[in-house]
Image 1: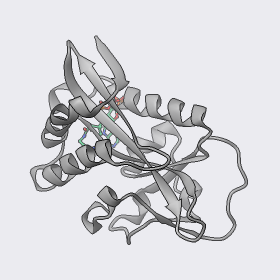
Image 2: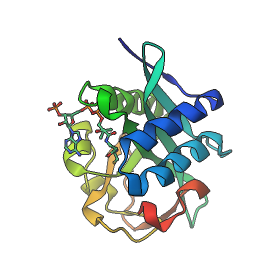
Image 3: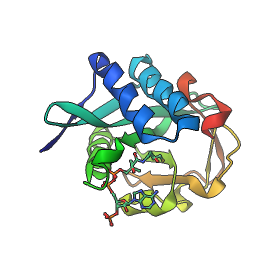
Length: 177
Ligand SMILES: CC(C)(COP(=O)(O)OP(=O)(O)OC[C@H]1O[C@@H](n2cnc3c(N)ncnc32)[C@H](O)[C@@H]1OP(=O)(O)O)[C@@H](O)C(=O)NCCC(=O)NCCS
């Protein structure tokens, strides 16, 4: 049976292992490093991570970190990255449960918008849409602009002018974008 719980620093090596297994070899070590760096990153507001466990083994992980407006130096919302599930445990709804856990928590915190840079076919299932991300400009030029998506968590007045976003240091790597 799968259980989802908040991750802590003691999960660091297990989280690293998840992403080393989940992602393709050419990107796996960068993503594993991102995941562990975000776990330790001090920020205000903070980062959040969840792990999925089966029989006491960590098989999946997800992280969320705040994004800021360059101009206003205020938190605009959060970004989901990374998400990984070990190959032997994929297609068992674990990735979906991790996303749902994060969305519920961020909604309860009153966060307005959650961004993601990923496959629209997958994230579209969870209400992420390119339209909601139109005015929120990513921190780096995107290799796949159609993967820039957002989901509004609370009704709010959307910005009419573009807002240039910045992200936490662990995500400041052009390869991620
Ligand atoms: C993407 C990932 C996290 C999904 O985790 P998972 O636990 O297998 O996902 P779930 O079981 O909750 O959902 C699986 C469903 O999503 C679909 N799905 C998975 N990846 C998809 C993708 N890239 N595009 C569209 N659909 C996708 C599956 O076909 C399945 O559909 P079904 O419910 O109709 O059977 C996992 O495949 C993974 O770790 N992949 C490698 C790392 C990665 O790409 N991470 C995401 C980066 S943006």
